[in-house]
Image 1 (cartoon, one colour):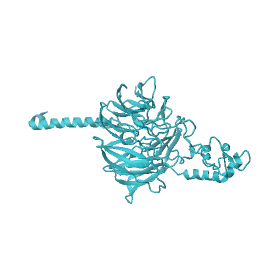
Image 2 (image 1 turned 45 degrees about the vertical axis):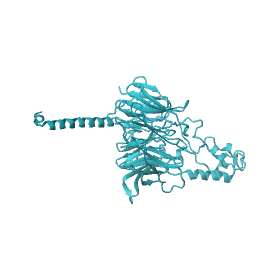
Image 3 (image 1 turned 30 degrees about the vertical axis):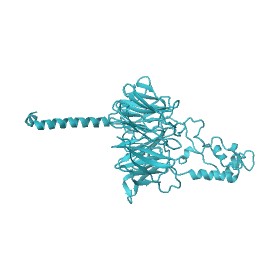
Image 4 (image 1 turned 135 degrees about the vertical axis):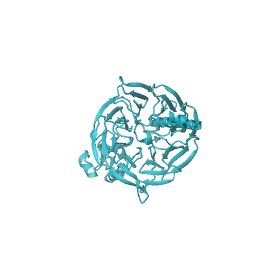
Length: 509
C-alpha cells in the first residue's frame, strides 16, 4: 500500500487497468477450462476439465438432478458456462432442432428448427442429428448433413447460415465440426469426393476447401469418413477409410497421408506427440464373422440330400459374413450380411443351390475382404524421409468399431461390442489386460475420463465406471434402460448423458 501511494496518478491508472485486464483474461481462461465446447471436449480427447468431479454412482432415485425429453438424436452435449447445446430430429415433420438448455435446472431456454428439403441416408440406428455442436465465447455452430451450417448467438438469434448440398453417403454424416481461431472446420468426405471445408466462423464464408489425397496402395476410390477432425500444431488430421490425412490449418494444403486398414469411423486421440486411432474393418476381426468352408468340407458336413450341390437351405442359418452383436436390428446381423443371403448372389442359374465353382467364387470374395486391422500409434514428430509419421505399434485384436479410444496415465483404453475392455501400454503397445466388464451389447458412445475415473456407456443403456490402472477395477454399474449412442459429458459435480430421446443430469451427492 505504501508503494502504491508513491506511484504517480498515471502509473496508478495503468496498474488498475492492468489488474482489470488480468482479471478478465483469468476469468475467460477459467471459463474455457471449465467448458466442453465440442465433441469429446478439448481436441476430442475425452478428458474432462480438472474441476470435474462427477458422481461415482448413477441412481435414478437418489442423484438424478433432472431429466428432459428431446427429439431423437445422437449428438453429445456441448457446454459453455451454464448452457448445454444439443441437436435433435423429429421424423414426423423432418424438423432439425437446436436446443439450448440450462444445465443446472434442465429447462429449455430456446429451441430453433430448420426444415431440410430432403434427408440424407442414415444407418438403421443413425440419425440426421448426429454431429455434436461446437462453440466459442461468442456463438454456437451447428452442422446438419441434410441442411448445412447454422450459427446462433447464445440467445438463439441466427447470425448466419451456410446451406450445403445434402451429403451423399451410405450412412449419413456424424463427424462433428471443430473450431480453431477464426476457422470452422467440417469433415465433408462423401461417396464421390473427400472434401474438408473451412469457413470463417464470423461470417460463414468459405475460407478454403481441401480434397484429401488417397492413401498409398488404395486399389479403388472408396470415400467415407465419420470421424471428427483433430488438431496437431499447425495441422488438421482426419481419419478416413483406409487412411489418415494431414492438411495445413491455414489453407488445407496436404502434408502427409498414411494408409491404415479402417472404415474411418472413430476419432483419433493425440497425447504427447503420439496419435492413437482404432482402425476397424468389418472383416478384420475374426470374432465377428464365420469362415466359409471349402466346397468338399461343406459336402461332407452339410449336404443332407447327397447331391452334387450345396443347397442354400443347407448353409447354417447362423453363419454370417459379419456380425454386429447387440444392435437389435431386424435380423441378428447388419443388413445383407447373412451368408445365406450372400450365397444368392452367386447362384447364377437361380436354382437355390451352388455348384463347386459358384461356391469357390463366394469363398474367394470373402477372402478378398479380409485384411489386418488394428489400433495404431504414430509418433507425429518423427518422420520418415520427411513424408509421414512413424508407426510405433499396432494391436490387431478386439478392436472397437465406433467408440474412440481414451488415453489416460500412459494407458490406452478401448471397449468393443460385447463389453470387452482392453487396456494397452501407450508407449510400447503391450496388452496390460483384456476383460469383460459385465455390460454386454453394442457400444457406440466413446468413453470419458473425469475426476480420476473412466465412464463407459453401452448402447443398451448400461453405465460402467472404472478406476484406471493395470487391473480392471469396476467402481459401479447402473442401467438407464434407454439406448445410448452419444458420449457422456462431465462438468463440475454433474454427469450428463444423452439418450436417443432425452437428456439425463446426475449430480454428485
